[in-house]
Structure formats: structure tokens, C-alpha cells
Length: 389
Image 1 (tube, one colour):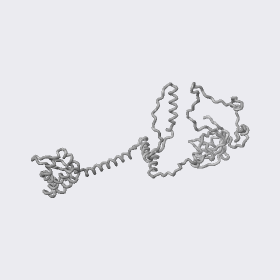
Image 2: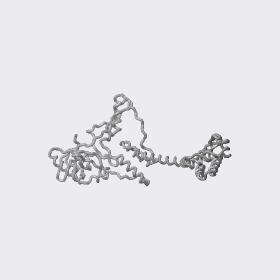
Image 3: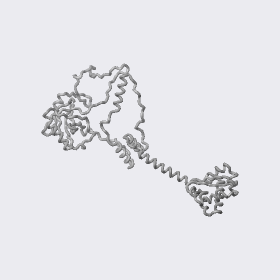
Image 4: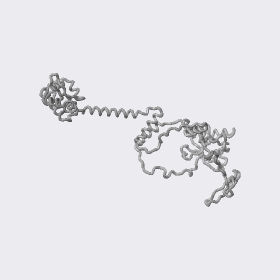
């Protein structure tokens, strides 16, 4: 890698010759400006405002613009005469814990390479001292015409330096936080914690710039004369959050599914609970279901009115006492039953199935109950239950 600066690290009385190498690179795709009509390049020319002539780089100098608009020329010799101890030296001023550096101050990153064989020993000494102390070094250095602040730390077996912004270059976050008071419930915090745990850690090497890859594919397709298929526009992640809890729960499920975990455990539990509730509701309705009264004729020509109900009524019907009640009921061909059978027909059957809603059903049930009570007192309660159920 090509060095961009040569100098030395000043470590007390120890001087370590080093070369400064860029530790990062920019992979963003740059574009040129063209004339849309014919595709010609658009170029910028440096022209003097006074005489209108184009000037070359060699003819261009520096100047400071004063408040009144006047220009104060500053030459390289003027700047070179200023006392700048860090012009060729990275001067370490302190060793501090790494967490004492605000990440907001982080700027460009560089690798420090030992410059020559004599620099290997002091370079290794500083590297191992930083490792053992678990601290970072604060240093001053000058680069591209200005003095800067830096932080030295160990990356693998190399000393790296991060450029830092000066403390007065960090703006205070005034007016950035939400103005209104917002309260967060414990349930929301619990779901947020669950989402954080589900997302967990990530392999940094697996992260990449999807947009840059899409732009590269677009350029390749254009260059070969092909037409790139436009992907379907997905739903935007923005919008108003109506239910924060629901959004958090959905996020947890989506994160679990993305990691191949069973993200439907909570959903299955909810479905099971819902099924239990539904089952209980059906049972309750069955218990309250009205008895369905039916009318039929016996071989002797008598009309029989029988009411059947679910649940406890069925169990009662299977007992000996209930059998007696059936027999008693079958034998009662009273006038009311005959009247109900002859006048009701199919309509009587429908009316009788309505939980005693019609007058005919009520009269029929009452007659059956009285007849059963006369012949067998033990069946009185069962018949009454069936009639009133």
C-alpha cells in the first residue's frame, strides 16, 4: 500500500519512524456530468473573475476571504514559517481507556507502518504496551496543512490511528430529541429486548452494499445493450405506527423466521388458547341448547311427543328411570298431544325445535310432564329438566 505521509511517533524520548497508509477505501460509484442531448462531457474551467481568462493549477494560490469580502493572500512559505511541532511527528499526549472516546469524534482511519528495520523494535514495544494496558493513545499530528487529533490502538498486529474531531467540532444535540414527554411501558421494553436478543450478533464480513451492487448490474446491462428488469417495488418501511406492541411482536417473529427459528411458538400458543376458549364456548352452548321436541305415531295409532336434549339429558335417558319416563310419555295420548300432532304437521315440528319459543311447544312439554308425574314420581325431575332445558 502506498504511504501518504512519512514521519515519526513521539513516545516520550522514543522516536519511531513510521509511514501513514490509508486503512479505508471508498467503493461508491462516481458519475460524470454529460450533456443530455449529445452525451458530451461537462467540464469545469477555472477562470479569473477579473480578466475572464482560464488559469492553470500552477497559477492558483491561497487567500483568506475577510468579512468585508477582501482577499488576504497566504503563501506556502507563510504557512511553513509557522511553528508546528507535529508537522512530521505524531505526538502522543496521553493514554486513556477506549470507552472514554466518543464515537462521534471518529474520523478517517489509517495504518501506521514501521519505516525501516530500526523502527521494528520500538514499534513492537508500543504495540505490546497498548495491548497489555488495554488503553488507547491520544496524539496530535499534522496532515494536509492543519493540525489534527488522533487515537492510536492495536488492530491485529498493527498500530492503527483514527483521526478524531476536536471536541469543539462536535455540535450539541439541541432540538433533536422528541419535545413531548413519551412514556414507554414495560411490555414494550420486554418486546424490544426480545427483538434485540433475536437479532443477536452478525458477521461483519457478511454485510455489503446492496445498492452499489445494483448500480453495477445496471451499468453492466446498459453497456451490453440489455434491459434490466425492474424489481417490484416493496412496501416502504416508513409510515405511521398504529400499534407499537403489534409491530414489535411482528418484528420478533420475522427475525426468528429469518434466522431459521420457529417464530410461531407464541402464535401456536395463542391458537391453542383460542381453541380451548372456542371449545369451552361450544360446550356451554350445548348445555344451554333447547330440547328438540318431536312427534311420532306408535303402532297403536297414538301420537307421541318426545323431547331430546344434549349433555345431561342423554345420560338420564340411558338410565332405567329415564326409560320409565319414556314409556310413560309414550303412553300418554292426551288431547293436547293429539291436538298438537294433528294441527302442527311439519310446522309443529319446526315450532317444537325452538326451545319452547312457541305456544304449542310449551303446551306439549307441560302435558308430557304432568303425565310422567302421575305414573312415576321418580321421573318427574328428569322430565321437568328435559322440558325446561
